[in-house]
Length: 374
Image (cartoon, rainbow, N blue to C red):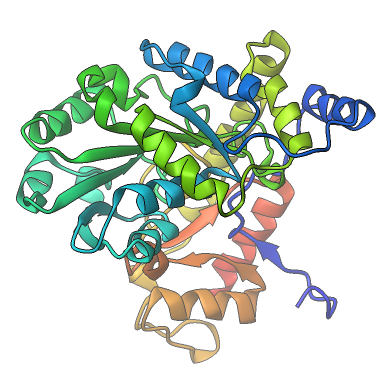
């Protein structure tokens, strides 16, 4: 549509609109000038793995070494490798819904069985201990948690994570904690899984990366940290697939993962901007009859309930029966892109990213409001 000259505003893109911070870009230039353009060891440069291990140690209060880290082509590859290395046919992977779109498919690619647990607005889209207890079976191999969440933006509190840990302790389930949005949190409630449950360290894989915090989505730098046996299994698969991310991106990421007051200030600025945009989008959504939305505490998404717009005549007499149909209608008629809730296992909702400038947010919301007017 854009190639045809149509002005399309996309709320679908899950990436910051900010430029990668200058110190990181400068490090990439330095890598080029120093000819750091050759293969690195599978799983990444030892010095980068060490920097990540030190970051994990600071984050969790536990002690990590470089042998407990593999650097991957984005956090998505880290998740894929974990499921491939750990899961077999017949294993079950517990996934709360709404879920990030790749969790279910990656479990299936490992021949495991996804066990979907539906959450709702009453629990702020968070997995409840009694739901987890009911889903556990002798075949449960893995539980995937994501906080702050994509797509809902919800954040688990320490008490909520502790309650889930109490349920999981008698089991042998491995926990994957996806913390890719860890630095984009707007309250003081954010807590990491291993801060609450350090006794799970030998059966937890932490998934994270540079994409969201440092606006480095295209650099494709993710990582997994956890027990050596799991990491070695993942790196073995990695050595026969991608081997490692680009050497230049790895070298630049050393700057991202080492302590830096300058980068801390840049990240804080981006978070402040995201929070202001969140508040603006919530104000705009509140003006649309038939739409309601919980206040997200993290990431850069809102996940509004749009069931009040379904099976009702909208502009030009159009009726949409599903959130997928509504998303297609908004793209065709209003020229705005959203992601329908079915993609996240939760029909009746849409996900909108507010990782863009205020003028685009206002214009996109104006188009939304006019398109769904009765």
